[in-house]
Length: 183
Image (cartoon, rainbow, N blue to C red):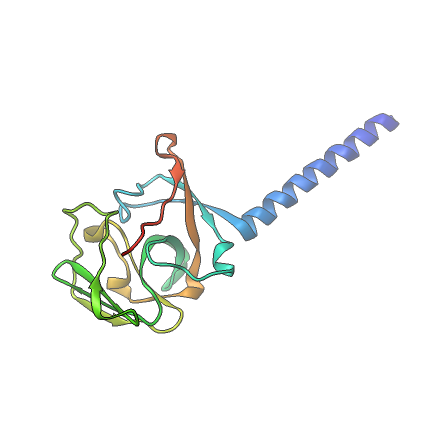
């Protein structure tokens, strides 16, 4: 009987440690996210299962090109996935299908090259916005079918949950999520 109780207590301890570890990791480090919708096609499809890093932005600021998951500002119970296009303090102009960024390093404006979207995908809309501190301009990769900052305005940093790091499902599409380099 004593051996049985000792084994039971040991099993409960291991189970408790495992549960606490999973809860800590899921709460503070990594969250799963299921893509729903086509706004990030062709890079992410509806049904893709991603792991979202919640820790990195505690130590650094979001960067242009990163794919993020965030709470929709008008309904924080809904989560979206989009790509960061504009950073705090920048002026973004979308016109004739092109995205131009104005900032301290480029006061005359610089058209960003978005190699992660197909050539035939056009960025619709005429938008001009200046971002305040802690504001980001986000867009889906499938520009014709994305409800994003062009529609509802800049995204405040407080709504950002984290950065997409891994695409785990389906297995045929499993990969680390790469971040494009901008020239």
